[in-house]
Length: 375
Image (cartoon, rainbow, N blue to C red; front, side):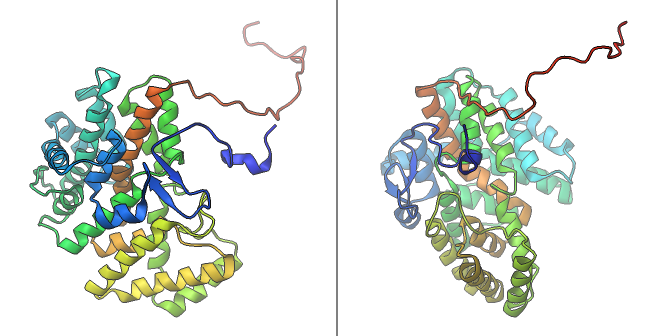
């Protein structure tokens, strides 16, 4: 019998993983044993993706080779470009990536399960290409060239978005954000990917399942909702009044609290630092100050800490990234974690099929005398 405390599988151990873990105190995050703080300070997203997918940090030679591999996978097949052009300009960008993933799976199918790494690398490298090809075609009718010489996924994304080589600060800020978003144990989208994988489905289908899950505002969509919240206030005083009103009305304030962290999301402090750097560079301190005022109110009134999504919103905004591209960036990053979990699930697979407590009517007879359309 489940209890209210177990709703949403809270506290239920659903499997084992060697990929990442939240510290037992609920204050730290580790990818294959490495603290997120160390990875964010010293590593690139490509190093982290390699770590997650292949199990260990790459040597310098392996990293160079991996970056070259990802660079070579950025171009899109013509058939996929045609599909992207046919999608409406009003489509949700998450649906664009979902469709792009599915179409690529028909054009470049996974022949055998051992190809998960290659499929994952192809998607990590080309998701940005898909999104921004669709974006530029529908914004100004331009069929952009999706291959760039940028060394990093972050640089490639910003280059395609803005049409120029990105500044170092913005590029590194996005790079760090990808590291922070790359993996987070049995979160909703990852668990969905593992469920799909447990049926012996292919990698593309598992990642499509994960994208659909990440689309929701209680998971990946929270960063967009956080930006919408921050942008509605003109200054700190306006924010203070507005947040107090929202709290009094018991409105949901996105970007705060987390199921697994008891004393604050360790990723939040890292991305907040980058948001502050970008604010100072772009003379955008007011937006940062509004964010910080909201953070202080939520801590004082609700004892809630900001999660990764809250300051990611302003960091992405300072980089000139449209709000509805925030969650697609999450997809690019988390594809590395999803792939790691797909590989792990396949290595020791069992169909994931939980039970449910039935709360419906007791067994009852079919009513006599009921009209039968076949009589």
